[in-house]
Image (cartoon, rainbow, N blue to C red; front, top):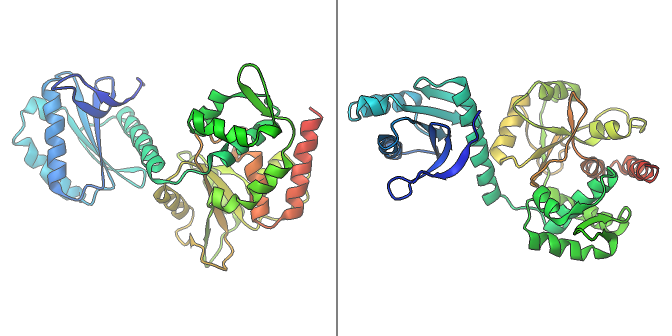
Length: 350
């Protein structure tokens, strides 16, 4: 597949921009279209672009539109009467709802559908980043450095920390200054923790709920955790890291943990609607916990650019620090202490 270029300047008609272009495919994406006039104007704009680009095809993507399939098809047919056949034959429509294709008009191939889904994912991430409060840069950089220390990966250059975290150079530099006494600095502008930062760890634990903003779900008729685990593993279109007890047993197989009272899952940059759609796909009876209720599933949504999951070939695991915080959140303090001591001992002996 050719590379997708986003927010692309075509260089025609006073530098016309389109949402994306891939080879000879031009894409426009519209969210929450409620008015038929916006649908019509989108078709007109895409058609006018195709007039000047006779070798290209235009695909209009409607995400979560309020217009029904029959209404869109009726308007599509009406539009065909006013556009030259050469232009109309190069127009296509894809409708998405809850991250799935619900309607197609035009001869759309599987490759084109895959590109549409990639574009939708990209613009969903942009929307999330605009509307979701990012965690404090200090705690996010601290989390990355602790994970790096646990894994014995050595120092990270500041630019690399920027890439992993998604924060600007000034924000990362400011965060590093606050933990300066805990850091070992190198001549190539790379840094690493000298040792496990106990004082900063206590601060992170205390701020954990505000940093991670967990979302808990429960059902009146709870299913077995193993059922949810297998269902998630079968969902190839969702990238989910197992944390909590499942993740802990991956990192520390010998830990004394019996049963799994709740399922902790980590996802990366998911919108609330994507989280709710995912949870409903596991069990339609799951609903958000109310005060005093114990969750059966907890979703932790990380907002850095890299999830830092571990892949054992069959499933993904949340990072070691996420698992530690999950245990503390579950009030499994003894087990959390055992996991931390195990990770520190392992790091010391490497």
